[in-house]
Image (cartoon, rainbow, N blue to C red; front, side, top):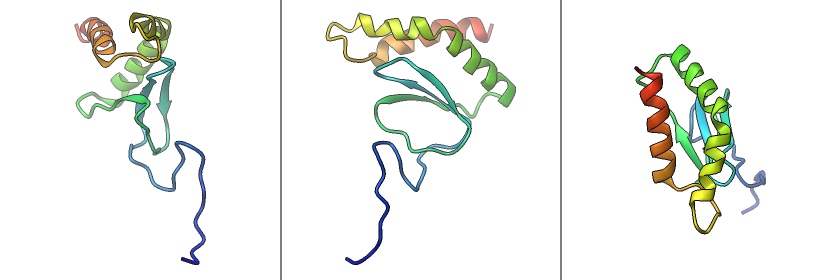
Length: 103
């Protein structure tokens, strides 16, 4: 008891559960973001963190995702409830992008 603990708003923590250099896509918004620092990810985002691609390719992938952000955001419309992007819809969309990217 008596310990001084910091209080953080949603998504903030003294610890990180993801490394720097991670791409996230918001489940609700479809927003694509590249994290330059370690961060705490919540369940409201998709995490794209692949150790199998080089840093330069990862940055290119990020830019490609950003360029297609409008299409990612539109995936929300495929969900009848319209609340967030479904994993299967994002996976299908990303597979199509990656097939072009890695050809």
